[in-house]
Length: 301
Image 1 (cartoon, one colour):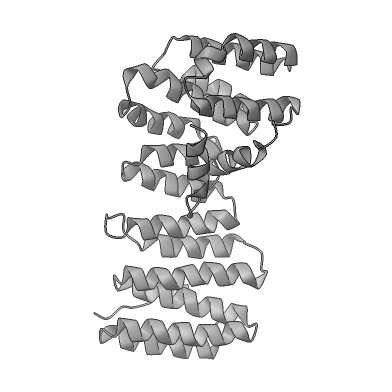
Image 2 (tube, rainbow, N blue to C red):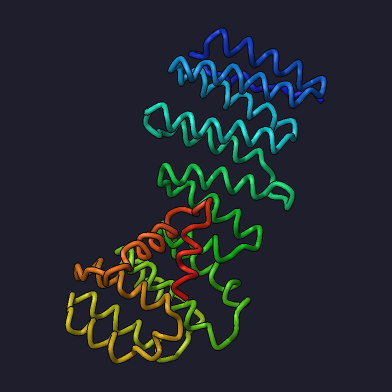
């Protein structure tokens, strides 16, 4: 089927070469020659990149990707979108608003359906590895929610400190676990906020969560917030020792708590733990396409 490109999407600064290539692709796609169109875009864009003409190469990848995605050719369109992100990174240009908007345009054309949602999420993950953006985290977080993947949604909302959405994603995630584990979800989320230095957000989350849970762990968390408020190291150490049995219910709690100690009191992690801390903290800001961060965390549980 024929696909039309909105004129407003074509940059006024686009070279005549890019315009000619894109016009040619519209004809190929109208005839159903999707693979040929993709290969032509790849070839022409790669030639531009080899000549260090990143603006031209990125424009080709972006426009070609948009065309194929609009034609419901999600795998081929995604491949060009990925090349756009990678080439833009290599260009050395600032990851500005224009770049972010173009990624959102590509992302928005991939439907949230089982057959292609992983392509959708992967595109955003690749972008977030290059640039932290509250808007992008919020966007993918909401899409994870719509897909019923509450743990992944929750991680993105923690990274941007969105308390309302943290609570909204935590409740259905908790419902998937055992009643005896409810306090683990609650306390882990609070510690994750603290581990990245968001004390005020942690206090708001802990106090606003309307499904009150009473356990030794939640008591510990309440006391910990007070200790961090007054920056009392001795109280932090005392609480950690006093509630060690409860904290050991989930080894990740101790890792997050050690990271809290590093963040608020400059307590350096024990030898060998630094890489684990970095992996876990990094997961709060972007998904790791390779899965290495998740695997690192699993090794600690």
